Image (tube, rainbow, N blue to C red; front, side):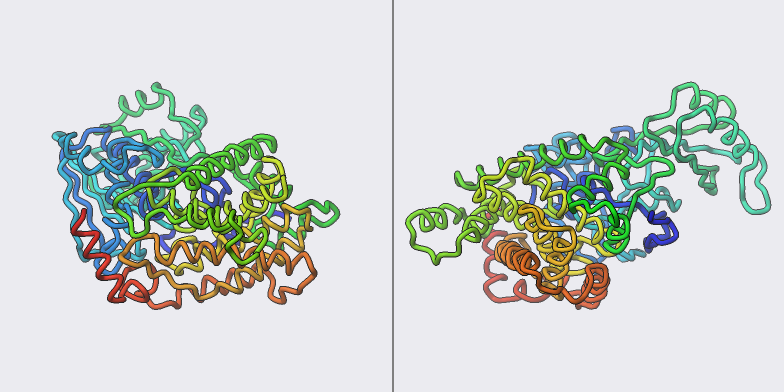
Amino acid sequence: MKASKAEMPVLRDGSPPQYPSIFNDVIGPVMRGPSSSHCAAAVRIGRLARDLMGGEMREVLVEFHPDGSLATTHESQGSDMGLFGGLLGWKAEDERLVDSAEAIRQAGIGVEIRITEFPAFHPNTYRITLRSEETEHRMIALSTGGGIIQVVEIDGVPLFMAGDFHETLVFLHGNGGSRGSDGSLPGLESLLIQLTAEVKADEILLHPTPEGAIIQIKAEDFPPPQFLQELCSEFSVSEIRTLSPTLPIQSRKAMDVPFLTALELQAYNQGRELQLCELAVHYESARGGISEDEVLERMEEILRIMEGSIEEGLAGTEYGDRILQAQTGFFQEHLEAGKLLDAGMLNRIILYVSALMEVKSSMGVIVAAPTAGSCGALPGAVVGAGHVLGLSTEDMARAMLAGGIIGVFIAARSTFAAEVCGCQAECGAGSGMAAAALVTLVGGSTEQALGGASMALQNTLGMICDPVANRVEVPCLGRNVLAASNALACANMALAGFDPVVPLDEVIETMDEVGKSLPHQLRCTALGGLSMTKTSKAIEERLRGSG
């Protein structure tokens, strides 16, 4: 049973639906910074904006809507830092990110940030105007959660880019031949039809503009020079811009996947009796056009980065601009001295979750899983349990893949953005993923893993996002610990045969409905919950004064 495109959700901007990738959408990016939807996504938006300008910029105007999340969080949660780094051509894991504001100033690029009323249907909307000595372009882009982005407009023209193709934009002046009654450009269209067969392009789109047209070429590589030369010889071309992919797994023409919901997965598994991790490998291999061995190798590489982050956190972290200084060492000392309540494996998991969260808050390298704000729960649970049980890197990587496919189901039907659905979309999703991963880690069945994920998500419905002092630290640390603890409990319940009652797909649909019903103030705006307490405001003032 294959998922048809007709069954895919339609994004609100009318852009074509995408099949989530475990490595694009769920476990990743490898990054630095407090928030993936703020920092890592902003890096990716900045890199595409830089490519749109051919690397040449003199002035950049960034506008955020007053009712969106970014109006109150763009500075404290890393959007400015990430965007500046991306405009400079840096990657999300670059150690220079913390100094990107000074670096962009030294590069001679003037940046202005405004809070402006403009049409924006998503809380994480960037309207960016870029100017050089020669040209000007405007881009509207969205951060949709977990570092995933969408470019939805360039120079007033609606189009769609997600950073998963090599994108070539050819800007034309003049009609390119007389327009048809429907506004089409038949002369140009006929040439494109002729040339498409000669170019290994997944899609060539024509976007008419008042001045001419924009040709958008989506491909697994940039088109050969002769193709562009022929366009230039036939039509008045003002600019050609090549925008490199920002995602690790590219998309391609006629992409297909074996399933996109838990129900479809169960149907696909009839007669196969595969573990959830094996089904995840089948999915990601089909989605990414890579071998099954490469899927596992990629996850093992990611797991090693996560283990390195845990080691860094256990060794102790230092960073000035944060609420909490290192506390993981205290927990480890008390655990080793036998001064904590006996919670067995759970105490090791708590230790690792705390270590990961402290590395994130000190600008160390972490892996969003599925977001930076929830980066502790899934790897903390899997690596903590794996180390207690003496399991191999491959065992833990397979468990991570099982968690990843749960994330794919969530990404396909809902979101990882707390700005859209609250913390249930981040720590709640991470808990569901971790429950399935833990079941898989000890050899549980696919049905048990799905059941554990369902119960974990049920237990986190309605979780709000209300960061103290507008930082992704408190109550984020505690909620990651809660997510991992909940995952361990639900994994054991599933292994013991507890009935989840409500199937996973229905829980995901409910999660989306509940999250979007949360008041705007409780969805990562620093306008509600703990973020409005006297203590939070006092901490915010203290941090602002020391910044």
